[in-house]
Amino acid sequence: MPGVRIGHGYDVHRLTGGRRLILGGVDIPWEKGLLGHSDADVLTHAVMDALLGAAGLGDIGRHFPDTDPAYAGADSLKLLAHVVRLLAEQGYVVGNVDATVLAQRPKLASYIPRMRDNLARVMGIESSQVNIKATTEEGLGFTGSGEGMAVHAVALIEKG
Image (cartoon, rainbow, N blue to C red; front, side):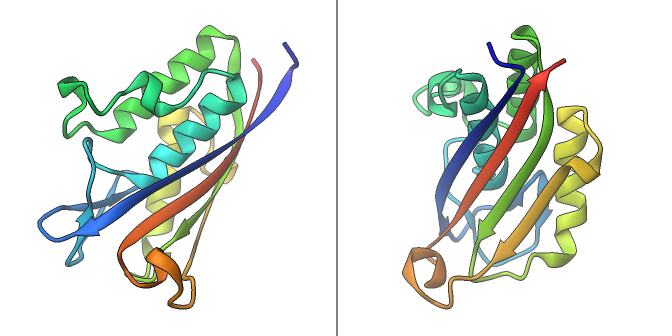
């Protein structure tokens, strides 16, 4: 296996009333939350998929199926910790992660430092190795209309 590998992750969740909005393990006060089997943390899910992809270990649906009641309401940061253990079993550590959150609202800039810190802590890396950006889509598409949120993430892993 090569010493350095790169993976891409993408996730999307519908916004709905009556749910908490959790991104990168940060509970963000807002009128809507993300719908999903777990806590629906779309940011953490995309990061997990990027890490799993880099290691050639499939995706989060394979490891944490939404048909398994064990993952109902699951804390995605705990699922991320499991992914990091899977990487370690293959001899990999996280080099860095870069993610872009696509959301019309709410504004996320003030929450990004805590998201970075949470993800870095769980992955066992420095916050400076995690970059998170947020952007709107100028009112276009399902993210622009406020129907949902999406995240693209890329991750570099390397032999430890």
